[in-house]
Amino acid sequence: MSDFFKEINIDNGFNLIKSFNLSGQKVQLKTKRKNLYIQFHFVLEGQVCFHIIKGTHKLPVAEQESLMFFNPKNIIPIDAYLTPDTKMLSVLLSLDAIHKLFDDFAIDFNFLRPKIKDKKLYSKKQLSANELIILNQIYNRELKHKLDYIYVKAKILELFTYYFSQSYPTKETCHNLKDERIVEKIKKAKEILVAHINEPPSIEELSNQVLLPVSILKKGFKELYGEPIYKYILNYKLELGRHLLMSKKYSVKEVSYQMGYSAPTHFVVAFKKKFGITPKKYMQNLIN
Image 1 (spheres, helix red, strand yellow):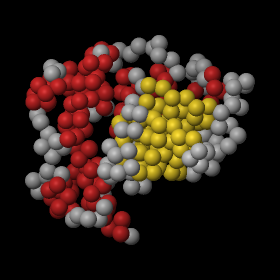
Image 2: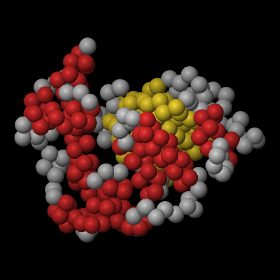
Image 3: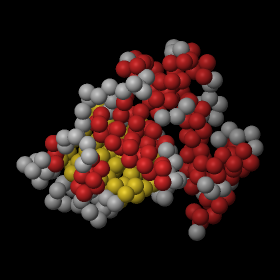
Image 4: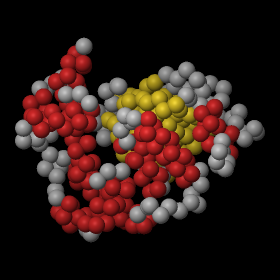
């Protein structure tokens, strides 16, 4: 796993990349590819600028936007710059993988038609609330067992149902997320939480600050960001703590107090539960 991204092989020709930049500065995501892939990049938070053809072309992608691109004649590496506080999920599919994944479904991929599939493709679009919900569910899923991989495949199918056609409603979607004013208030709530990550307001205080009923805030936040409010705070704190450890400027004890834990042992337990390794062992691995 890199400092700020993790690439996961779901199946042959089917990879996920989870990126999360908490470094406080712009970072470069650069990976080489050995085969042709159709690349789908979904920016959940922050902003990403993709460099194409050795930086001669730059494609900025804003928060809650996506970029799909494919060059049938050249293998394109991923070369992108992530601003601070950026969270992105990338789905990479070979032509064989995309056919294998969707052959049993009547999804019409225009870009794979004979007259089109030999042309370069660059497509950017705004993500819908439905897509954001599914993307956060995928991003936050821990892939530890075979069933987790099946879950991700199913969610990718659901995602592309919306991505390539906006005409499919869902009963699971919170109707309030169709109201852009409510979505903006939920996003504001997230910004408040991040700004006060060590001493976050209570849900009641947060609801008063963003002028949303508690029930709508809780349900909408979980659907938009894929996690309940306090789980989101916990995961954000642990990611931030991991980056502080990675800087090698602080001890485990210092990081635990910076993250607002009353005792280092509480931080150690939470860190191991999320990352499967103790903070001390994590730092030892960085040194080695």
